[in-house]
Structure formats: structure tokens, C-alpha cells
Image (cartoon, rainbow, N blue to C red; front, side, top):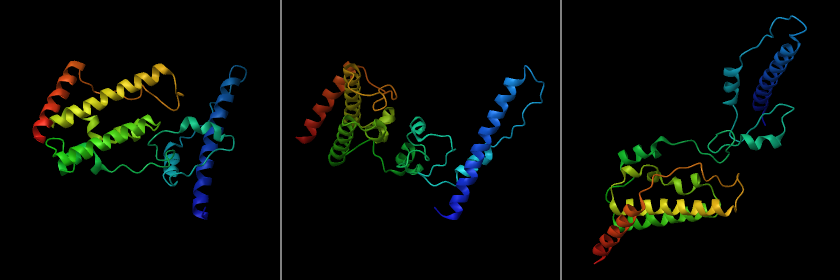
Length: 217
């Protein structure tokens, strides 16, 4: 670590320690208030300074108070937190659903057979990756239109996607009922899917099958 980085880390650590000391002093004053009449402890708002120093840290860099144990850090790890999720990449607004549609990079209205097969293959690969134990947010749900199914107008793509979501729900139910996972490894209640009623889904899949057979002929 360079001298500049070390100075920034020391400054952030000082802010953390000062804030903790002020809280401890305030708590001590409250405990003694019943027997001694003392003025309230002087507190200083370090919120702005704290977050300003945090922005100077590099991704993956951690500054902690002397009494902070690394074993406690697991409760602070969150997906997509730029300071805790080292593998996170900054969000690119051009990859948002609306931007992809506006730029023509995402086709959800009329896919040709080659593009449809590639999309289906990628979606099934993501589904298998989730079943192998990876986070659903980093696998299946990286397919952006699965979160905007109401906007998908291609009949084949829509039917297949709803089928995959229904299959995902079935798998999730089996995993939960079998109790073959640890809670920190699989959170089945974190994501809710927009599903079709089963009769409507089956009729949609049947109509899609007939349509594809007609195209092949």
C-alpha cells in the first residue's frame, strides 16, 4: 500500500474509532445520569466525512477498527455492494432493459430461428448453473427480459421463457421441501417470478410447438 493509501486508511480508521468512542461515552453518561447530573455528551456527525473517506478506498480494500473481528464481516457481505463484493463490475446503464430495447440490441418481438436457438441455449445453461449451486441473480436472472416478461411479444420466446420460470419454481419447491441446502447457500424466497396460470402456459407451449413445426416445414 502506498503512503497516500495508508494515510487515507488511517484517516478512515480514525473516524471509525472516534465515532465508536463517542457512542461509548454517550452510553456511559446515560448510565450515570441517575446518580450524577452531567451535561449530555458532545457528539459529532461524521457521516459525510466517513462516506467521503470510503470513496477513496479501492474495491476489495477494507479498513476496520481494532476491536472488529473478521469473523463478523460475513454478516456484512452483500451482492452488488462495491466494497464487499470484490467481483462486482460497475453498472453499465447501456445494459438496462429499456436501453437495450431503444438501441435495438435486444430483440423481444420477432426473433429468427438462429437467434432463438442461441437464446434458449444460453437460458438453459444459466438454469443448469443455478442448479449447480450458483446464485440465481448471477445465473438465470442475468437474462434481462425474464424480469420484464410483460414486454416480450415474440410468442415463441414468451412461451419458452414462461416455461423456464415455471420449471425454476418447481425446482425451487423441490429443493426447499427436501431440505438439502444451508440457508446461506440458497435463499428460495428472495426472488418472486411473474408466472402464467398452468392451463394458459400449457396451451401457449402447445401453440408454440405447432407454430415451430409449421416454420420448419
